[in-house]
Length: 115
Length: 116
Image 1 (tube, chains in turn brown, red):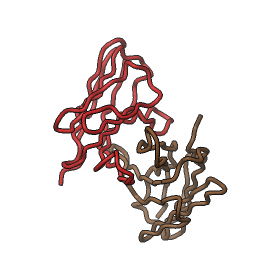
Image 2: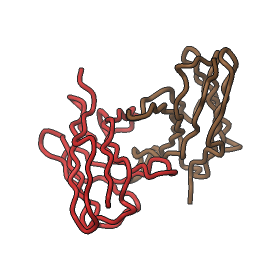
Image 3: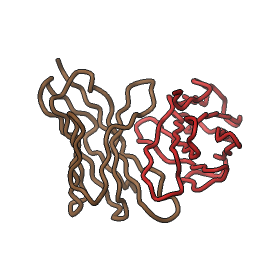
Image 4: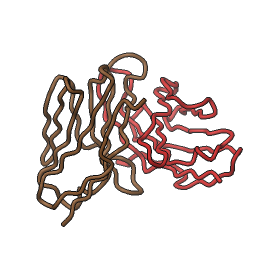
């Protein structure tokens, strides 16, 4: 039972254009969402997060949108750069109870930004 | 500041053997998390340690175990290795796992375990 789903295994975007990575979740207890970026042979690195009390969070070229009613979040990268090419993981956590602080990850989306 | 470190980088074992993987968290971090990334799958939560205690474990059999030492470093042990245990094992640390604060988890580079 996959609680966090990234339905697109891969995405190709031209340099300078917008990249949109999508993530859906099923567990209504999730109230904190994160995006991680992973380069080959490295561990994931934190990119941006959003709490369920917000519907948008921006950090430079990266914006995360959260639609709680649809249980959907997306990561927008504008403008996309070749260095953004990596695997992006969506993750979620629930804020109470045992195991609250563990992260549940999606399978990842491989983004390729074409120069 | 040094990041999360893991050793060894690669580990090759045969079926039935035991594997021990090690993780050193960022200085000052008390929580350590272990994840498994098998081929074609996302990161699957394995274990969470905080202040020397196991706080939670994921849906893995008991032959996956570990511990956290007084210096907050951690060890993951996998007994009776099976072929499907071949995966990248990632360790992450965070400042504190027991207060209502969403602490970012910082990941190490991982240990690639291959079971032949």
